[in-house]
Amino acid sequence: MIVYDNTYWDDVEKVIQCVPHISELFHKSILITGGTGLICSAVAELLFHLNRTRDAGIKILLAGRSQERMGKRFYPFSEGTDYSFLQYDATKDEALTISADYIIHGASNASPAVFRSQPVETMLSNLIGLNCLMEMAVKNHTKRVLYISSSEVYGQKTDRHPYSESDYGYVDILNPRAAYPSSKRAAETLCAAYGEEYGVDTVIVRPGHIYGPSITDSDDRASAQFTRDAVQGESIMMKSAGSQLRSYCYTLDCASAILTVLLNGKKGCAYNISNRDSVVSVRDVAEMLAQETGTRIEFCNPSDMEKKGYSMMENSALDAEKLEKTGWRGLYDLRTGIQKTILFFKAPKG
Image (cartoon, rainbow, N blue to C red; front, top):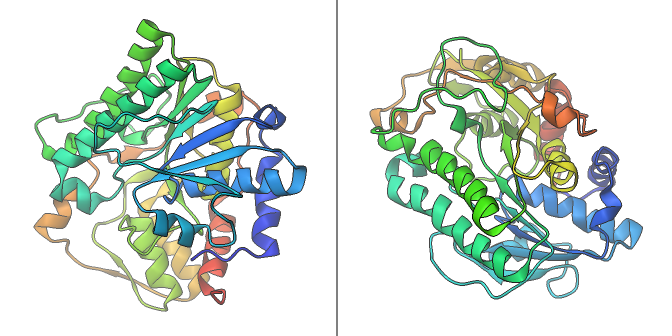
């Protein structure tokens, strides 16, 4: 459960200042899928803050599978007053009858454990859920749909230079683990197809590795596991040499980037989300967490099942120059973001 104290809301206010033309969202309706997830919960918090501090009059529609979970995630806010809940399951092909000015689609499996155990569901949810939203967007003349993709669409390449938005590598499509990047690629093409055939205004974001206070207990990605171990005073368990190069971005910076692209991105284009001060190796993250918490790093061998869930990319560093040209900037470098994340996890819970 996140701690909504003055420090957190001060940080929310700071990142809002980084979103050009934010007032264009005032008195509009915004549907967010995956509202309890790591990324989209932070987006919702920015909108809540706008309504409470600027009387923005934004109608917030949060879609998810569990109404109870949504209520717990946003416990200071009231359903029916601060937001409306929409029952939504990205794996089901069900017509949606609600309308919204903007749609931010973030519902997707994001767990390596799920990628290996449910590759079929992982793949279908990335396509079925988006198609249902696109059909709704066509019917209701939605202003814009923003699709949250992934850095994994880039695949593998041999050098360690950051990826630009047109720099695609190799994906082994016969590896079941490719269910995630392959379906994310296909979903991006579906966005382009709806734009061409039906005129839907779509934009795409490709976040790097996102971390921060909204990490959940069920998040089994490496940075989340490292964080939980470190703040509990336990050794950080690394199951590889940690040489993989990654782009990291603090949750609130990622949320402000999403709203920036929603308002300022060019129709039909994709934008990397990455903080230029946070492109480091997996081991660098572990070492920084260990330094900040006084814990140590231990190495152990992963199981064969764990290996099946690992990303196939040795390099997933992203070049965010295109995003920065829209006027966005990331506020929290890796050390600052890690320090804030640690303080959150150590803070007394409600």
